[in-house]
Image (cartoon, rainbow, N blue to C red; front, side, top):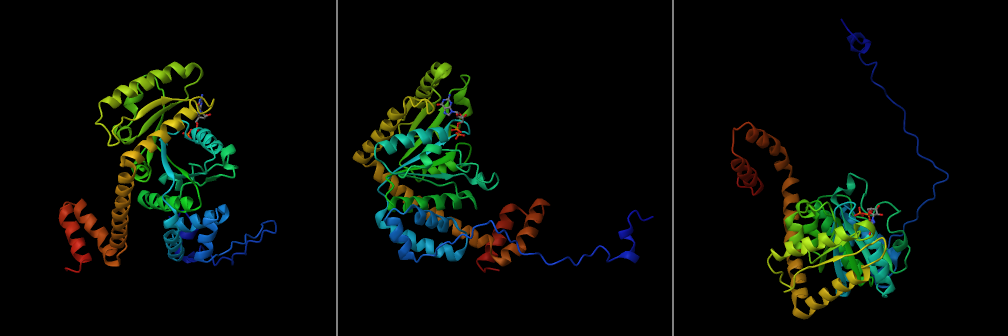
Length: 362
Ligand code: GDP
């Protein structure tokens, strides 16, 4: 008994639809975007002149996955490198809701009043899924985003964390060449992205909020250990005392960690990004710490270590990609995986077979 007529062999083929040719999308209201394609030297010249539009387009090239874009981006970065490196790079992390964007707005506006030029970049590997959750919506940092001396850029969305982070790191070079003397790299404090941010900044600031006395449990020890300073936000109104108590708890907890290489323990401060209280003190704390590290050589040592980290990281990523995109490996990968899952082969044997194939040993 056939339930559907299309299952009857007699009618087979009826379901096949030839379809119609797709009409071109014509929207008379849509303005045609004329994107200029500059030469490498034009890009570099524009960046060095502090042209935000050109900087923005160059960052888009850095973020692009197209090989031809990467080629140009690499040349731009190389030519900008001699002009880069002079900024103070801050990493800013905290769980969603901790008040990162409110804080960046408050800190940023204050820095701009100091006469600084600020670039805000972000690393959010989840932004592809959530369509740019971080720095994505236009309502964030309303005041800061319209400042002449501020450049705000959402997270590059495509690719692995390593890839996203590398692009952000390369964008730092371009921003520095464009004259930005303070760079914020924001990340959501929930995963591995803090490690990536930590490896590209001079000061890693952890934004926390007072919980119900159990705030120390919720936070990963590693993130606390990485931080150069902890700032308890929302120290206002009824929350003021709880914020102070949380700060005291953090100070005690930090005493249990080994002394950081800078020779001073991370400071714990309270502030209110919304009310603006404690913001200037927080900035002074970060700036003083960076100045101290410049004096005692820790700043330079850290940057050297980061350069070396990124060199190795880039090599590893390139090797990994080359391996996994190898045609023969791709063909064999699935069957090896099945064999491992069916207990027909150990994971190590399967890996060795694939590696031998890759290195033409079999
Ligand atoms: P993010 O997710 O970490 O970027 O956090 P947001 O900056 O979006 O802030 C989350 C919420 O906390 C918003 O409703 C803010 O208005 C609020 N908020 C941020 N800073 C403060 C503060 O200093 N005091 C108070 N009371 N609320 C704040």
